[in-house]
Amino acid sequence: MFHAADRVLVGVMPNPADFQIARNAGWYRIPAKHAPPSTTDATVLAFYFTAAFKETRWAIHWYAEVRGHELVRRRDLLPRQPDHPRADAPYYKLQLGPLIRREPAIPSLRWRRLTFIETTWDRFNAAEEINDLYTSGADGLYVTLKECGFFPEREYLIREAEGEYTADLAIHCREGVVAVVLGERPAPAAALRQADPAAVRDAVAQLGGPVAPQEHE
Image: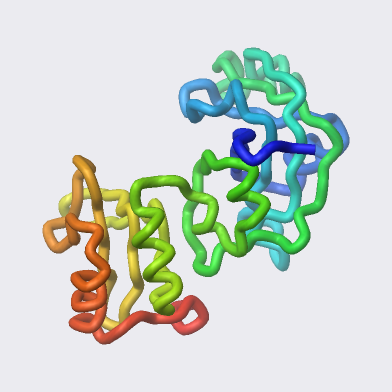
């Protein structure tokens, strides 16, 4: 049905009411000001469930073919909310085919805040967990660290007193977090700036070793 290089966009499904719109009315909205680059050329839209979905939270259970898109005002999408602060803001309305269940689901091993993930059909089809979906220059290091049992997180938000940073990779340890930030991205002072497995292993060892997701939670 889909090809390996087809674009897949993973969007957050904030609540069951919006999920019913996707399922019954066949559309999903994205604020134009926050829309990722692949919004208008995605072939597949997948849904990441938030805590509002209780026992099915923090995972991708459903996806759908994207059959078209248009730019509309929020008030035209949700006419029963005319007084919403963003009623006149532009939104992309993605028109969807029937929802398809993803078996098995793609879970997030740790709770984390997501916005959008842009990936490809081959990655989506093969993914065992959320981190497998990301595409970046850290692919090789991610695979190496995952095989070593380090449970790396990709595109991970780190908050410090000096500000917020997005790490290409982050490894939760017993005494802190090892962050790997590549390229020109801003980074915490202690972040590693090289994709060197040996350096990452040493940094993880200095912080007491990796922590499995279930231990961390």
